[in-house]
Length: 264
Ligand SMILES: [Fe+2]
Ligand SMILES: [Fe+2]
Image (cartoon, rainbow, N blue to C red):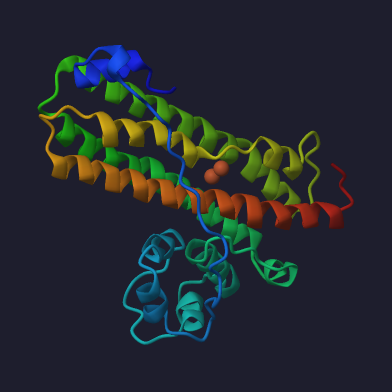
């Protein structure tokens, strides 16, 4: 749902014809990949180089207290495949990173699915709750009508996410498990998933635009910034999540399908 001029007018207490709304879409430069992470580097150095990886650690079940241990040592301590961990960290850190077939072959599909599942729980149980809390604080001085507009956008987005994750959890992941176990599950291929897979982060744009441009003057700027920081963080994380599904999970499962003699 895009914010209509009428909705924007309510937020700004202005007449609809006075509102000019332009949707902004961020584009990422995909030509900045140079060095990639390796198993012999220290885990602390890896995290220090990109703090976004903190979320990856917890979702992969790696706990703090790794001292000067290498990535490989720490992964093995927590029973995580080093290759899979490195692959995910590289996707998170280097925009446009596309792993070679050789690197993909070394990844563990089960670990990838586990990571994606943990991420779904993180988005629903943590990220959206934090966003909701920051919106609630920001909206305190707003009128009932203004509040209800923002909450409608938020609710619609949450429902979209729930639907998207539900499909992956109930249809895609069980299918991947069946491919791993070489058990027949007819009527579905990973190609179908890839074809219909939508970019859930792009849909955050409406909420981001409305919060950035049209909050009434009674709202505290610091609280608006806090909401925006949550939105940008979630958007970035979801973008990487989608890359892991499209550029790692799909080609890996496709190869397994081919090995098993399945066809599109
Ligand atoms: Fe997902
Ligand atoms: Fe997805």
